[in-house]
Length: 626
Ligand SMILES: *Cc1c(COP(=O)(O)O)cnc(C)c1O
Image (cartoon, rainbow, N blue to C red):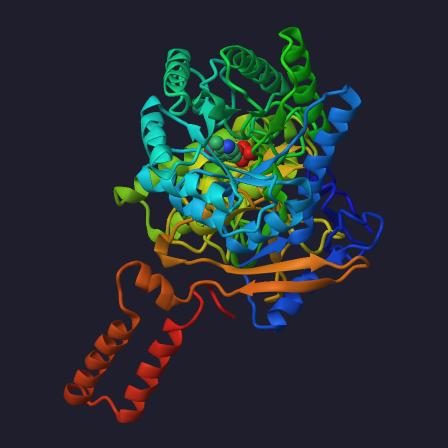
């Protein structure tokens, strides 16, 4: 049996996935790694039997619980080892995944660690206030706040919430002081600092002088003076800074922490009783498993992240004789990414294989004859030359076709010959390890297209928007050689709905190794690490709506338990998002059918069938149904 891990599943999926003996992907229970995993194909099959079809977004609660435990334990261990005298208290930034099922579980799993929530808008604040948080966990309010936001936040302290208003601008302060006086409640305040250190990666604009968020040094000084003048300096208990997301390099985290500590010391010396040092998000996910400082990878482990932060804070604050604070981080991505995966089926495939070997014929155009002749000198050393000739002859013949000098049979034979020869070149190159970029591109252009039952825009928006890499692999047949190479097309009618960058064990590839799909069998692909940001950023392109969502809990000894099922959008729902009233649209269709009964001899039974079919569609799934 061949179980070579060409997809790198053991690298990027190490603590959650495993290739099983039957060739399927198994979901490992991270709390019981030695126990047998749950067969993902079995899970999909049993969901299908329940009437839940692909595409399915599968949430595995154990992975979320595990990450929350890991992050907290890692910080607690670092604190112990380093002899840090303060605490750690994390918060989950709600914007990263606001879904009720997710937030409910984060609150549940986080309770014993006093895990709190970070909110950036009024709706997110309302979500946080509807949860039974432990009395020691914080609700940290970032973002631009109006009167209503501030009013509710301050008032919520009355019912036991530790709601901290982080000042994003000097203007906000006046409003907060005014409202707090009206309510006669002292607010809990934070101050957001704009650090000068810039980070690399996709979110570098969140850091440095030009960052949209936080106060510059002059503004910090201003705010402190104002607080003092109004006798509110004693309310300032938290200092916040956020560097961005998916920070690839640990050095950048260390430098930023160091700078944040300098502010912490200075602001403390100005007389503010700071208790919390909030370092924001940025803890990355190693989507590629490469363990290096690159866009979709990180060059540090969770333990290293925690140790570096705790060590730096201790060192810097000891230097200035400031007592150790409670460290807060706002890790969204690292908390939630691994707990969701998208599973979809392949609907059809397009390949560029050639049917037959082309032989020269006396009616062939001379250029076509030359093209066929390439086969006579094709070998490894001359592969590039053959490709050049092949492209040259085809271009010339295409020009002749456009100007009417070559007929359809000759043109068809040319294209067929082209495919035939390029496939031959591909075969010749199989044994070669040094393929030039140009040859590789030509070969990539010959890859199959696998058409998947999903919308990139709905389910994987960051793949479209910022070329995010999420690992993708077939979830079956991993004991067999994947004998084809493919790119993936989604079900939308948008040429951007394509995936052509893939994470493999040996690096990033433009094509995904896949298996040939035999007579109509089901073939499923999984896209992993999609729990962060994707669900809310997704849109309704072509009116493909939310997919079915299923939350499962893994059993200790294999198998799983279905905790929650959320049916995807129906057509009627997505129509209502774009201002159609489903009842109205049915009536409109009915009246068109009724007109046809009158004027076109439509029979009454045909009328019934048409309206029935329309009604069934409108209550159905927006994706391809079997
Ligand atoms: C988005 C955001 C986060 C989350 O960042 P991750 O990189 O996902 O951990 C944390 N804090 C603030 C203020 C944010 O805006």
